[in-house]
Length: 132
Image (cartoon, rainbow, N blue to C red; front, side):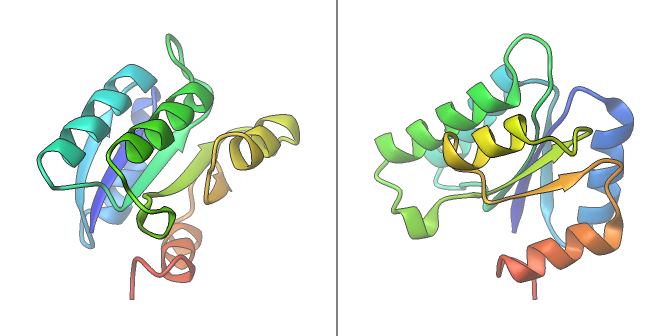
């Protein structure tokens, strides 16, 4: 499994990385721009990310915009909806509008509220079928 962790907060990035590194190859991006570049490069190399852990609230380019661009890149590369990366939105906000927009406008797969709990994250990956 290959995971892209996108978060502007060092502690959050590090926590997710520590949880996932026994199970996956993890790359890190600190904002939406870096996430888009890494995601595109992975597809171009034939090494796509199976999971993206994506913070919604980031400076420069936020998670909502990054998610839209990630889905657009998949579409440009002919990635079938079944094979799209599972995008787990990670947010401090147990929020209605942001979460709604991520799912219904951006194509997020699921979301977790920070601080990220190891059991919940691994359980979510199992329920999405990317971790056995």
